[in-house]
Length: 437
Image (cartoon, rainbow, N blue to C red; front, side, top):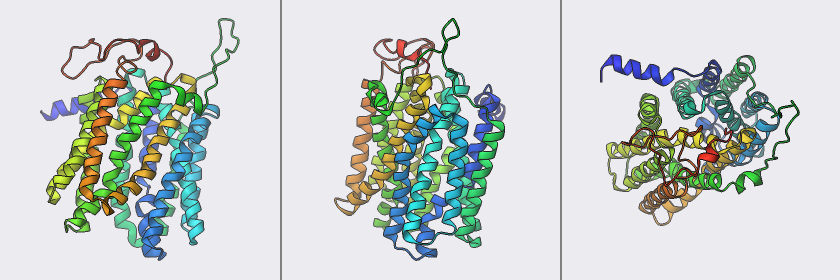
């Protein structure tokens, strides 16, 4: 592929999206560029404050536990209060928590602040996802989610490099920088991002139409979406396991921590370098096939970890499940947007975000217990099995609900013919034509 063709491909990938999306994209990049707290929290608690490794692990777990509560809270506020107010308030709350971490030293105080920070950070995500679904045309939603995810990882890569280089300034200084970046993100949203929450529906006489009230229970009663959430939870468990199991597995084979650092860095390098290309290759493809493929890549990549014996081999496994990650995250967000009623986009995104948070809390504990008990090979066999089960679940349980693009257009399967429906039939057409987040 020539330089010109690559340039044209990149231009096509980023073109055609509204200006508001790019302000949101910029806010994501700025926010993640200063994301130092969670990256350096364990080192700060152990090296700087002298707490035990057990307490450092608890701190990270509490951050995830806060997200379990924060995601549905953010979804509710997004629908009731608005997208922009929720984003601004939750960003400012996260910034305040980062500042508090720079001054609080007691164990209980740190635990409380980390928990609240987890709530605030996770609560902002439903509003971001709902805003993208509001402002971007339905046929470009998955591409927009992919670009926003690319900004998130690009910012995180910058933060990891910059934070490591600036660590000599002290962890507290990094937390202050985190707070400043988060405030700047809130300012960008407040000044440049319009409110996108849909106006209340009216009848032909201009009178308000009573919309069906949607609670979290209502969301969970939505069978196709409930299936999507449960399958995403399984995939998230597989995706989260390597962040705990991989360093333990490599250490068990006598490899150094620096080797793990290089291997896991492959994840960020691949995403930053190839997210746009992957998005181009998967654009307009069937979401069911993409979700099934991503689950299989997670299964194969993590399962092959049991066979790896060198840093190069471990890095190869990371490449495989990272490609699965690049496919899964935007496709799952777009599928959530498709299945949700327009006036309940925040709640649907909030429930979906809760599955990520639950996995982030459960998977580290489970992975550590399995490695300490039956051993690493059992962990990787389990992740492979869960990934395969997830792929089968996507293909057999969601073919109808996700078989068509919004507006009744069929999607193109891999190697298929444009306009050829994917799945058993078009029973999802009625659902897909409804307003979705």
